[in-house]
Image (cartoon, rainbow, N blue to C red; front, side, top):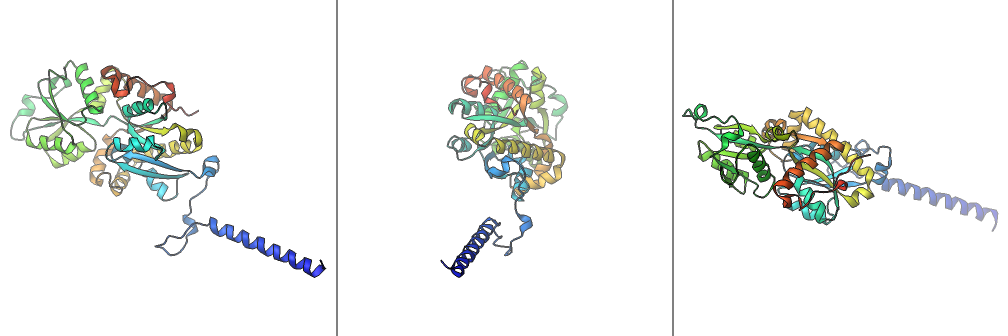
Length: 360
């Protein structure tokens, strides 16, 4: 090969490598917003240091439309704006049983579900999930309907749980957390739930609210934010008992409503992603609890509940991010109470220590 042909070949190879490098850079660039028409490089997702960023994981989360999702609204907004350490896809559902299949089949990685359901699924999936935090403490309240045209309030006050004896109580959640919680609190206050009160379980919170509107002396158990909705619609309702406080009075333990669980396989494959989620969620909860007006606006924008309702309800929703030993102690104590009431409510047996993910 003569010198000219050799130099030409070198130049051709150099040009080819340059073009390949340019193509690679173009493929890595963020896509343009089709509505904006121009790619804004300042909107690209920031890439933090560490292995979690290198994984480029999108965490798929299923959550219930209520307080458990209300605590995540800042995380959801920050993820959309590219401000979180990784991407999150949060889907909301109206009932816990809609989430079960998604979690078991691996269609979601993380879920916010009732605490006792987590225990049931732990057994059914043969330790296929772990609890990483408590996201909501008690959200149940007892409301009383009053007659504005009578002195029933002063003649028949409800000063303690014991005063519920002989009354009719409307509630939702037959065979679920509201029933277990109400029965436990009544029993510990000397009331037999089957003999001393008449508990009528209805299928929807709206049905309970309707019953309250028809009566001047009805009693109801409702969760937030339905408590706020009902009180906004009916000025003759008053909040008489916070069942979270009543539970705590009994033996000092916490009433636990919702927990966050992760599939064990996902945790083992992406431990850094789970660590990042726990940090991002903790920041979201802190924001929601400390910035109620702004958080209520986000809750409304995600159509969880209307903004005015969220503004009143958020301080009463007991949204938390309890992890580690505090989480384990409170969940264990709560499940122990349910087990004593009905072993099947927690899956027939209490979960062992591997049920709890304690970040090292």
